Image (cartoon, rainbow, N blue to C red):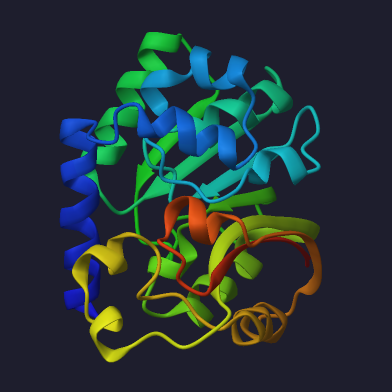
Length: 238
């Protein structure tokens, strides 16, 4: 498991340092449902790493405390911040130091005060019990070796009645042994992905009531060379 995390950290540290996705960021963000206005206004925070738009399906209210699992450079955090207003707060957690540094720099540039970026592992969240109203996560949980622990931690930190809104890659068919061992597919959210029903079962086992909000099979051809997978967007209520 530590090997997997090291590969992921190294891959995302490189992206944070080089901003390497370039024009691909805008194309990816458009394909998965972000508006052109958001993409333009938050261009430094958009690294093209998502597979959905959890802030769009998330029922985030003014004054809410929101947690983003795997916040990257802060794109979804800044979108959620607009919804919570000055009375709310958005916390982004990421295990890659370089991403946290970049997110803090973006917050400074945007002069956003009610956001916080914390270095931490989503399998062991540095967040107190029942302190979060809404959790969002965008194509990150599939990167975690212990997904059961991630969902258990999400359930722990949410207030009663709180909700987790996530977008993630799930498999609709088997990967080859070579694909499962491919470092690029690991950091690209494929090699660590689970079959759809297995993934949903893990969410339910953590104590959530699950509602599927959207399924995007087109993403397979758009971003993943036709591998048999989809992007799944889910609402999970504690």
